[in-house]
Amino acid sequence: MFYDPRVDPKPAPLTHNPFNALVAPRPIGWIATVDTQGRPNLAPFSYFNGLSADPPLIGFAPNALEAGPDGRCKDTLSNLREVPELTANVVSAHLARAMNETSRALPPGESEFDAAGLTAVPARWVRAPRVGEALACMECEVFDIIRLPAKPQGRVSHLVLAAVVGIHIDDHLIRDGRVDSLALAQVARLGYFDYSIVRETFELPRPE
Image 1: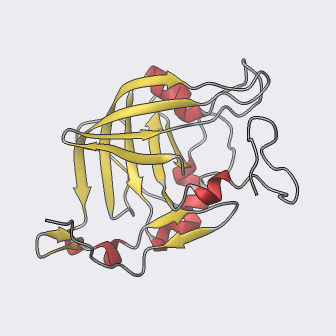
Image 2: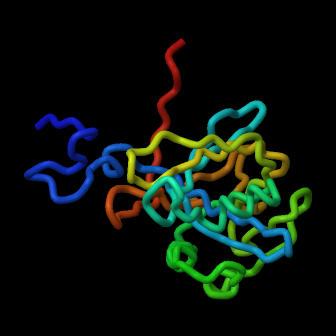
């Protein structure tokens, strides 16, 4: 089939928007921030990825909670406008359910760390804490926040670009000078409510 998503994002026979299923699997950025009072927030974002290796740069896109040009933004974005620092924590298989729990909508200022039974550990360079149970984490400073185009009454999204200023890696992941992808067992988002876990890899060297 062919369709124009500008006209209808899920024309028959589709019953759900397939875009997320087609651009997948996507790593999950488990983003921790703080407000000006130092209260932490933790939320998962599947529109997340690395954008540059040297210098390392990540990006993720938080949607507004409500439709319309004045829709209320997520606490993550509000916090970053006040305190432009964050940690991006890696979600491994053993943390999948805790990650999902932190997607719950809590009142502003209420800690997702506490709600999910996670440990908020002070970061080295930024004010936002990191997830103590995560096997890897990137400490970041916001580089830019870009408002993305939206339909007239659609939800507004923003692209947050952040420079990585510190990286934590659990020592047992490092083998032969590399991070062991199978030991990290990252969780990735597919379409709808489907997820995947990295349990198999293959090597494909670049052509000479």
